[in-house]
Every structure is written in structure tokens, then in C-alpha cells.
Amino acid sequence: MNAARDARILDVIRALDEGEVSTYGDIAETAGHPKLSRLVGRLLAVGVPDDELPWWRVVNAAGRLVPGHEAEQAALLRAEGVTVRDGRVVAAPVGRFRRPARP
Image 1 (cartoon, one colour):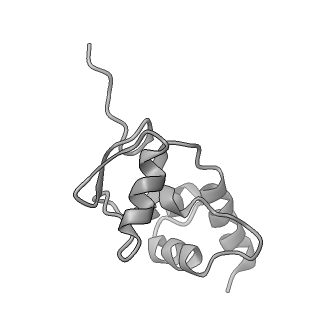
Image 2 (cartoon, helix red, strand yellow):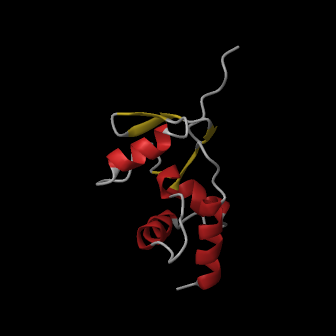
């Protein structure tokens, strides 16, 4: 366990804004640990006592939602303006899945 590394990853997750969707890999890279995407998933699964992490804003690289939590995650994302189709994020106002504006 590396408390400083874990804290940095959790800080990156906490910093995700409403409507922003990121991947486990992007979170790890932003935190300075690009090869630790699985750790991001583990930290989200374990959670932090008394701390509401915006877990629903993190998906895999293909935009897939968290298995077993798809309905809840999709509802939370849609409430933030994210387009979810067939268990996958297809467009988000902010982040990796942001669609560029059309000219």
C-alpha cells in the first residue's frame, strides 16, 4: 500500500466535474501512475469511509459501465447530460468522451 499514491489517485477522481467522464487509465495517468489503471478500479471498489467518490464518472477505455451497476451508473450519468447507449458512454459534455462541436 502506498498512501501518497492512493491519495493522489483519489484526489483526481474527486476533481471530476459534473458531466465529465474519464477512464481508469486516464485517472491513473493524470495522477502520475500511468500503468496503474487496475488500482484505480480497486480504489473505487473499496471506497473511502465518509467520502462520496464520483465513481459513476469513471468507465473503461471503451466507455463501458461498471458491471452489475449499469442501470444506476447510467441514470447518474444521464442526470449530468451524458449520453449512454447499450451500457456504454457515447458522448459526454466534458472529458474523454466529449464530442467536438460541429461547425
